[in-house]
Length: 299
Image 1 (cartoon, rainbow, N blue to C red):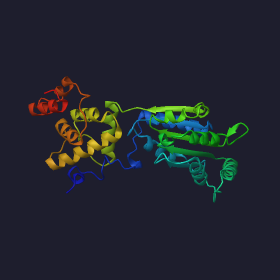
Image 2: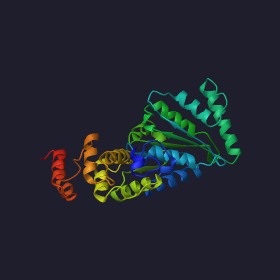
Image 3: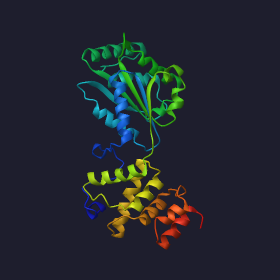
Image 4: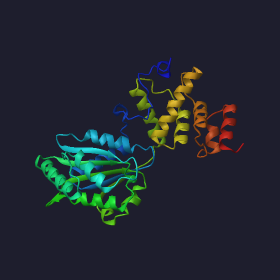
């Protein structure tokens, strides 16, 4: 028997694996998507979405890709998995993703092929869009200059290619490697950590999608999850998943703050963001208070 059966869940509610069914359309994610789509539909050229680790950048990138109807857009997403890529690889890969057949070996010919393909897309009444995830990996001036060159592919009064960077705060340093490119950023949006109110809605939403009861975590438990996760969705998922498993092992039907503190301790997450007053007011259980004091290292 798994915790799914124990809690009458149809599927894991807090997996960090990409799953469109669990996309949580928070206000800031909705605002970000609206702004990014504005850049694309207005052919502004370059936009940047910045967020910390686990704040939902890749989730949003995938959501945007799904939103781009192929009848109106020629779109693709590239994920930068390491920093050793070169301009030639980027150019060739973008050309292939946008439909260039058999890209040539030399750069100038590939650029000509890409430009012709972009003109075809334009003649079809569609827009070309490339999403770059983990863009902070673009750590050379040559790469930034290559993207500036791609943004120069245009016809009078209209850009032929829109590029959206999704990355950590370090993407700002990458852009500064080529000041003319940095000046071409038409829009920049920063994703922030979730508030306690949004964290509550987020947890309840994922439980609902998984077919379970939305009140499996009591209020104090959610407060503790928010503090340990710092409002970061990826960490919220990890803590909640472990809490469900721990509760299953303990044969209890509801997650309280004590279980959250136990799980957070096992995961090595710091509770130093919690004041003593906040920790004590979460519970009247003396054993739990003692455990909190141990974690806060002030006993």
